[in-house]
Length: 424
Image 1 (cartoon, rainbow, N blue to C red):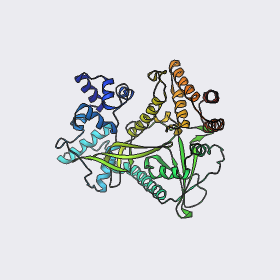
Image 2: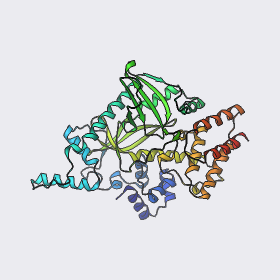
Image 3: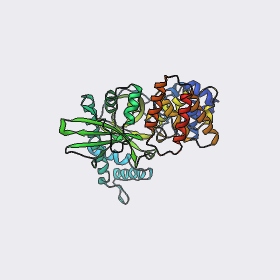
Image 4: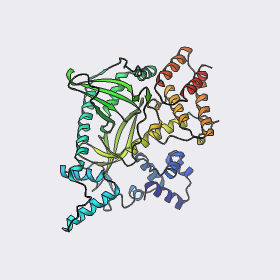
């Protein structure tokens, strides 16, 4: 049984409405509705609030199939180790679909009984070697970036790219009064292996590594120049093709990715089930995320990528709700359901980020009514901005620079309405 299904079953048994449950837990009613309407599970960070509100243990919430039956205790981190062969078996199993997992388990059961074994369709030992090799490479590269960031071996490349479309993110940080080098250092200290891809086609000198952060719609281009004594040369650029901002494809809901934890919150005895804490930098905001994880090796864990993206989307929806006035019905608009719907610049409580978030919200609306409500929210917010004439001009110029690279045809008209309402 899914966690969300279990929650709604308990609510029905006890006669608790979703609105009452929202007040009990502090979780937005819209988020609870998404659990039911879209089949989402609560994020790991909300499990504690749910259990406390319903006066149940995590064991009761997860069900007997999800946790060990010999102990309900959740304890601090308990060290254990597995050898390389065991890691490979786990990797093969975790990267298999449900049908293949059943065949693997059946195969292992027959092995344990010394039965005659039909090896047809059994995964080959070497099938996972490319996966393991790629992960090993990304882990090494990620650790290198983190180490150089903490050693303060970073230089910014603020030169203009040939496309002429790369300086707007620097201008965005300048507009907010944020030290660019400090921002980059903080971002790189928390970068994760699943975010990065090594790019060899753009090398301009030997002994260098070009890295593209593909986790964001707007990416960060990192050149690790080994010829200069291990120095990071960081340059923002749009993830674009022919001048049009490219959205990353939606990740599979069951995709497992490797992460380095910032800390470990808890561990269920006699299992590989943990709760870990990681930091994800999105725009100018660094978000702490508490997430369910499985131990992979001595350095890191496997997590469900969808849990990370869901936490980021929930944060954006929470910001968006705060921007709506009492005269506008927030329930009339479609909320964000995908990370790809939200711009890199839409995380934060500053004026620029708020406008960016409201623009993103307007662009995803499907019905005429929801478009009208979202457009009204954007125009009302812009009309209430109190700034000097020079400040308003800088804001408008920065917004126009930021939206130079975008494939949405409606943007020029939207920007024109933003101009009118800010200046008025």
